[in-house]
Length: 136
Image (tube, rainbow, N blue to C red):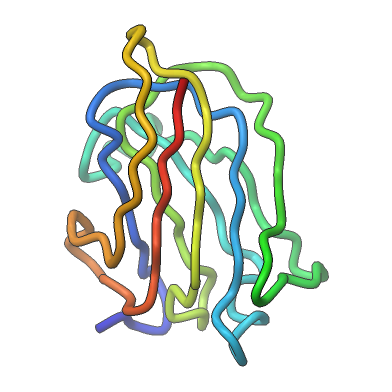
């Protein structure tokens, strides 16, 4: 189960990719718990060392996080990464309903996969979460 702070849910993309877009939606009744959360990328499954973790986007603390539909964020940070994660804000319990990472693989293979309740994260595995990697 997730803890109030320092919880995250991550995904191994299988190979390096450049993230171009993130879509996310909150769990019903818990939208405020996503405010201040960050989407990060790394080439290390443990997201260590910290200086090799790239923050792709932080949800503004005053934003209205949608429930039942996606918020969409274009990502302009360059670089290719194999691991992505949503890192919940302090007190957020890593509450998230659905996340889609979209981008371009470093190889020419085209992939679109849905993963429910990802388990690669060693720190938390929130229930009712879906991750959708979609890459050209």
